[in-house]
Image (cartoon, rainbow, N blue to C red):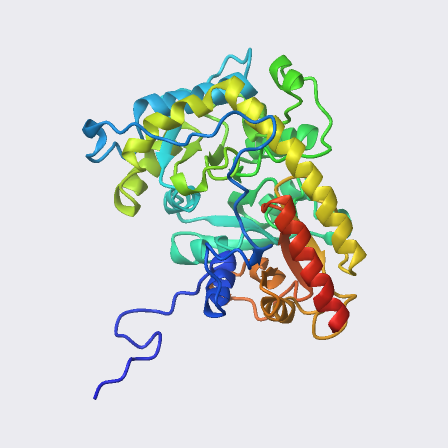
Length: 430
């Protein structure tokens, strides 16, 4: 009578951890959670609500499929979609600039993780800097590809989780970095590099010849950011504020600036798995080559349907609605967390997460993992902060952020309210 082998003991295979949200959702599933179960509240979700929002354009609820698109699409994406992405960046961020993005500066990938994998796979033997805390999936991503050495850059919480341009320059020169990866706005803290400070970062990249790789998947979720002279009339008219390093690039093919974005967050179509990489022509060529063996290309039939979403008027209207609705949810979640004893040291300037410190709660709830486990008893899902202590290859012995948890205001307002009521009962009963 045979027995099942223990995980990690099958010859030739290693144990691959589930990261962040995937881990917590799998643990919740073990406790009975299902995606259609209305009794569960996920304050750990990494996706925004995908239904209609007040003031937003109508959602795409149907697709017309062309049988000619049932075959494989180009690895770098459909030409029409690449052109639409390039035009979007030029119209929103580069009006009047001599250097403009073209189809040669864009490739399409099947989702954000695949796009990031393409970029990282194209890196040569070098030192890559990454910030702590940051997106949980970076840990395995930076462990899997061995052509570079990942080097952590610790963000000082006493400085509102922010890094100045001079500090960035010091890290690049002092550690011999050839590239730096970061999410902007940051997942999980919501802290934002924008305006003059973002321009200074791009200037540092130019001067030091260090590539900056920006994960801009939350770049339309911007709160309390003043407009700048570079904001165009259309954005001002819609009261929409978008942030991208593309605004500060001088030469699209020479400046070492790479951006990754897609439909997942900023257009609220996470299940479509359509994303893009924008950057210098040489980077796009190498990322496309990496895609030829990593993923083979994005969903072919969906790519044509995506194009109208990238029209400037549509994108700005969607962004304005997102910011109106999500700024209200942000205010609600921050205030409610504080009222139940969770410390919110720095309110998020972007994304849809609140980085909460549980240190003031009674034991064992002052620990993020214990808080997560106990919250499952109330059918509420959160994400422990230790998952964002990006530690490729587990080279560091000491973990940070034990007392932190990431709370998402991606869910509906009703779900937020119900989830916080349950967490309040959890804390009171402790």
